[in-house]
Amino acid sequence: MAAIDNITFRLDQLTSMNTMMVKTLELAEKAAKSNLPILLLGESGTGKTLLAKAIHLSSLRENNTFISFNASAMTDTLLESQLFGYEKGAFTGASQLTRGRFEMADHGTIFFDEIADMSSVAQAKVLRAVEYGEFERLGSEKTRTVDVRIISATNKPLLSLTKTGDFREDLFHRLNGVTLRIPALRERREDLPTMIAGQIQGLSARFNKEIEGISPDAFEKLMDYHWPGNLRELNRVIERAVCFCDGTTILLDNIIMNEEVFSYDQEIKNITQPEEKPSTLNLEDDLSLDKAINLHVNHVYALHNFNKSKTAEALGISRTRLDRKLAGQD
Ligand SMILES: Nc1ncnc2c1ncn2[C@@H]1O[C@H](COP(=O)(O)OP(=O)(O)OP(=O)(O)O)[C@@H](O)[C@H]1O
Ligand SMILES: [Mg+2]
Image (cartoon, rainbow, N blue to C red):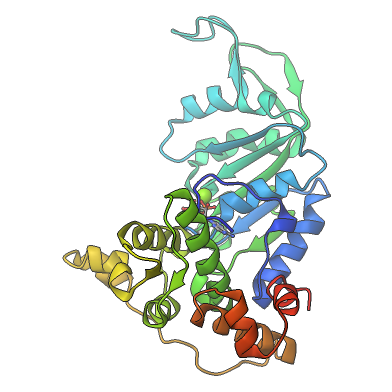
């Protein structure tokens, strides 16, 4: 999987070996085919925006518009005009009729990013449009109806915010048809080897480098890190490593974590204290032998600098069988 910003995937192109993420992807696949509103929860950088687009691209609306709308840092009046549009002359400066995001997304999807940052006034304004697809353009009394699928996302504890009165409970229920939680990267470490390999390959090609792999100590450093910035941070660290790498193998020196770059910044240090690494299995984990074998295959693959022939030889299996295992088909 390439580590390129703004790259889009369909749901069937997203894979995971982590039980929680697999469940999230399975639910997303089912929910995508319905018209239910979907609420995405996950820390910053876990891939909420990417998943929202993947859901749209895997839905019956895939050929229609996907509109992303971030309401944070927006005045309530601006939000209203952006979402619902306005007639010519509706306010000073409204020189021509302008359609809003709801109209633009008719038969498609609107993605409300950072939904928890919407002001209470804004929350009240979107409530009816979210539930019934009904709204009026500013300066018009005519009610318009659109057919829009709503996906929203937040990295805040939305349910708790309804309890403290910071987020409208009625809006919460309207957005929350299906809730999908994306685990933090440190909770899905089993996906790291495949992601690291994919990012190195993608970025190496993008920057015209001929990087074939990563040294075991550099790989261990990536595996041991707690990734507070999740996939966004992983992408940046690997982008940096690819940029600094002079040879064909990424070395330990090429791996520079954000907190090393910003080591002077006490605040950053405080929020990135490594948490204890879980060392034992839990009953709710996937305890199957297949899972353990998959993990082992990925580790051996990374240890051999993502060289398939050497990996297959070390594992004592054929190249074809290795390909199937890496694709999760064996
Ligand atoms: N499965 C994936 N494989 C590769 N890259 C990914 C994957 N998921 C997300 N990314 C990349 O990680 C970065 C962060 O993803 P995204 O913007 O979707 O996260 P987010 O949860 O929406 O973050 P925020 O809360 O800050 O909005 C993006 O550059 C995205 O392309
Ligand atoms: Mg986002």
